[in-house]
Structure formats: C-alpha cells, structure tokens
Length: 637
Image (cartoon, rainbow, N blue to C red; front, side):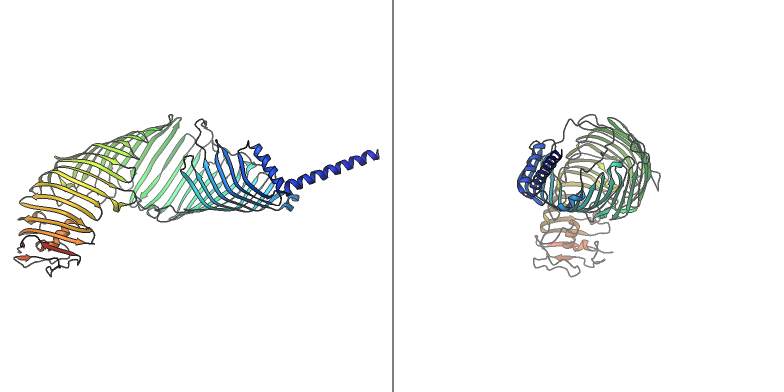
C-alpha cells in the first residue's frame, strides 16, 4: 500500500515537473512563442501571417510584419507589435502588461455585403467577460491608416495613447487619447458590461478641418445602461450649445430631445456660412416609428418659429407629415410635406412646399419681398425634377418667377425654362449648371420690354436683349473665375432714351477682362475695345452730346478717342477708367472737384503721365490721345 502511494506521488511529481518544463518552454523561449503563434494561426484557418517573432510569451515579445486577411472583414497589416508583460503578476491571477506598442497599422476594409439582413430591432452589445483579468499600463499606437476597399481614405490617426483594465465583465478606460491631423479626442469610461453596459463614457474633442476658421470643441457624455441611455453634448467652441437625448422608458419606447443655444457663431465654424449666428431652442420626442419637433430658431436677426415637424416611418417609407414654419416678427409662413421610399437600391422621394408673405432680411431692393409661391420636387439623389412658381414685390413692382429644374444636384442641373415677368416685361432663359467642381454655367437670356429699374432704381426702361454667357468658378478659388458674356441684340429704351448696341466681355480671372462693347443711348455712342485689368491696353471712343444719359447732373459735350495703358494695378470699373481720361465727367465722381470752370480744355496726355493738376491720379496709369486732340467740354451753371 505504501509502495503504491509512493509510486503515485513520484508519478504526480514527474507530471508536475513536465508541466512546469512545458510551460517554461512555451512561455519563456522563442521556440515556444513560435509554437504558440503556429497554433493561433491554425485556429484562424491560416488567415494570420507573422513575418518574424522575437522574445517569449512571458518575457516580452516583438512581432514584425503581421497580416490578418479575411475577405469578409478586410486586410489588416501591422508593421510592429511589442508587448512587455510582468510575468510575476500572473501568480495574482492578473495579466499585467507594462507596455504595448503598435506601429504602422494599415487597414483596408472589406466591401459591403449585399446579403446583410436589415434589422428593425435596435442593436445591442452583448456582455463581455475577460478570460483572465488584465491591465494595460501603457498603450502606444502610431501611424494608423484606415481605407475603404477601393482605397478611399476613412481616417488617418497619428497616435493613440491609453491605459485600461478589464476584469470579469467590468471595463475601465483610464486614458484613450487619439491625435488626428484634424485635432484630438480623449476618452475615459467605466462600464459594467454584465449589467446591460451600465456606466458612463466621456469623450472630449477639439477638431478643426481644412478651411474651418476655428476649432469645434466640446464634450460628449454617454450614460447607460444601453436599454435606457442618456446622451449629453456640450459645445464650448466656437460658441456654447447643448444637446440632450434620452430614452427614459427604454429604447423601444419614446425618446426625448432638447437642443439649445443662445447664439452659436456659425461663421466661426464654416468659411462660407449662410448665416453669421444661430440661436435656437428646440424640443422633441418620438419613438422608433415617429418623431415630432417644435421650437424657435433665429438666423442672425431673422426669427423663425418651428410650429411643427412631424415624421413617420412606414417601412420602407419615411413620411414627412408636416413641416410648419412661421416668421417670429412677421406674418410669413411655410408649409411642406413629402416622403422617401427606401424599398429599392436608390431612395426615391418627393416634397411639396408652399410659402406666403415671406420677408427674409435681404438688402434693397429685396427687403420687402412679401414672397409667396409653391415648389414641388421628386426623384432620386442623382436625378431630380423640380418646379418653382413664385410671386414677390421688388421695388414696389410685382415679379413672377416660373422655373423648372432637372438633373443631378451634385453634378449637373438643367434649368429650362426660366421665366421672370414684371409688368409688361419678361425675361426668359435656360441654363446648364455644372456643380461637380465649383460652379460652371452655360446660359441663354432673352428679354422683352424688361425693366432694369427692378434691380437698379436709377436705370428705368424697357430693354430688349439676346445674350449668352458661359463660365466657371473653381471650388475654393474664386480668383480663378472665368466667364464671358456676348450680347447679340440690344434694343428698347433706357432712361427714356433709345437703346441699341452689342458686344462681348471675356473675364479670364478677377483681374483681367477683354472687352468689345458698342453702346448707343439716345444720341450718345460709347465704344470700348481692348484689355482692362491688372494689365490695361484699352481704347475708348466716346461721342456724348447728352452725358446726362449716364450721369444725370452732367451737361455739355464729350468727344474723345483715348487709349489707356497701365500695368500692375488691380481691376477698376469702366466708369473709373473713363473718369481718369475725361475731366468733364470727373466732377460727378467721388474725390474730384465739384465744379470745373474750364469752358474748354484740351487734353493731350502722354506716356510720361502729364495730366490736369485738379485730379490725383494713380502714378501707375498713363493715358494718351490717339487723335490730334481729345476735346472735352463742360459748361457750368
């Protein structure tokens, strides 16, 4: 009996020694590390490849050129992984990693799967139980690039620094700082995953994208459990704003929303903001199938009351039952309804809106529009059809607009027909708008007895016009604008004088224009030929027996044939250029004498820059007469 016990003890001791040797070999040698990696590779069906492995499982290891590829998940590559464990802490039942370093992470996501079933139920995170309590004292990740399957960048991360502990079902993140090219994110969390993810997570952010004037900074806080979550967003920069969203009775019940800001400086966030400042107070509630919002919004000095915004989901449709807006300081209002059908591969929608008595805060002559009208639109995101019918007051005249649009709002829209009716006058046209890279256009305009006084109160008349225009303004570079306008027919009357002429204007950029214009207004004739802009070489021929047609206070007779040459100066309007060579008109412009006593002045300026002493002309400008002399006369009262 004793001999049997002795043999059993010797056998157990031998087995323990063998286990210790195997564990020591597996955890303390490089060959053991390679063996373990081979087993992991087999479990992953040979989807894992490791270029080289150094060190041991318990003493610290360094892995290079790691790749995990799964066609359903994507292609994951890591240039270097270093792990520094504290093996002595294993006896306490906890895996303690003093440092984990990862460098050169390149992730290419898999293409989206077409057979992924749509789920109507909310997504729920399962409990997470750690097989072994573990703590990472220092995590350092450098240079992370995530791309779509076609190579489109998703995110580029410069660095991640963190520290966390996972024991049982509890996850505690003491630090998780992410540095991007656009700014920084910092997260902390303390969550019990076994208690339906009860706990809280906090993310502080400070981000600034290209062309954004100032950073967007604030804090987002999420509190659980996930069945009754609470979300709080507080923006601090560029201005204060808050958003609160919660589900007090559970995700399958109703949610509540509240958004507030006493004044958010939108122009400090967006370079081309449509409004400088937005103040809002919005309340809402809903569930998985409905949503309703109301409140007020102030856009700069224009107040809007959100009377109702009601949405309903009837799978596969989303229905806008009602949108009702009213002016806070007026009687204008907007009512709209619509729907989106999501049953196909491409969403199909429609919307209709009516407005009555709208007076947005615009500059004169659009400051008293009292606009009313109707718009209807339908189609897909890449094929839109819309019809606009509107009536408004401009300079106390009624204006009616009728337009139809069709095309891709992201690439190309065709506007045809376009009709603007004012009294007995009418402006018709059609245009092709190119929207893929900035704004391009190809337009044709026809006017019949159209009154320019609608836009320019000092220039009333009835103008007949045929014109075409093409051009392009690149996105983000307005200085590279190119445009041309060609007037093939000009007639009617302007300022109670017969109007005729035509011509062409080509704008190569914002500082250079080539002109060939012939204008006849009453008995006056004006012709301009050449280049005007930063480099000027233009000829102006004027026979103006009635200069009051252009400047109501002018009198006398202007007869000139001038060539203007200049270099290195910016664009000046045609009136300013003419003023430099026409003393008889100078008194009508700012910065020149109010009276001229010359009954007749002979001007024969030369390239040296000689000119009448009464005007302070730019030194870079020279004018010279191309005829024996240019006689300009002005008589004063």
